[in-house]
Length: 116
Length: 108
Image: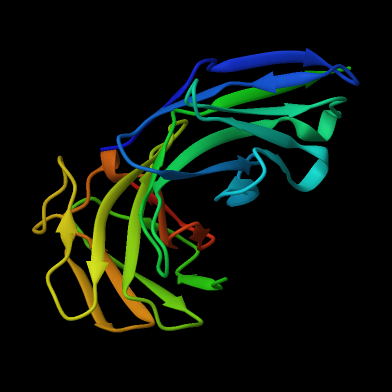
């Protein structure tokens, strides 16, 4: 079975500062990894995903994440945040599976609060 | 990729009633998934809906409370039965990494 731990429930940061949201996973099989963002009172939006290949994945809105297999981590980073990045961020893991769709297991979420 | 729509987008219901949520996918898929997001919480998988077989429920969720139908490869419904205020949540349909917009349910 897979599990996801998001190490910080809340991350306050000042505008234009860098940010890292931490995510660790546990799995005995190969996995795919995802980061989603949820703005207040809105649905889920996929930021980026790691399926295979390069361990550095670039996503939308200037976010990137690095897959580290030895540390079973998939931390999300942004070099300079904006007020508009204030939202809830979810890390998720999916059992690696070719040719179909599978369920996702979500972490508890990290609330990013960007202050002026 | 998959485009997913859900109906209704939101509803306010009285306790003791039931609500059926519909999920439509723009392509044929074997498995569809239903999640619940309680207020201020993360997403929790309710069940996996396979076409042509009974849904598979996660621990803590039962068919009597959340009956699911999967009549074809592009459609599924989730019913929230005998609702109580604790059922107030967002219910999301998904196909792998793709999610519908969710159904916001408030039970009074």
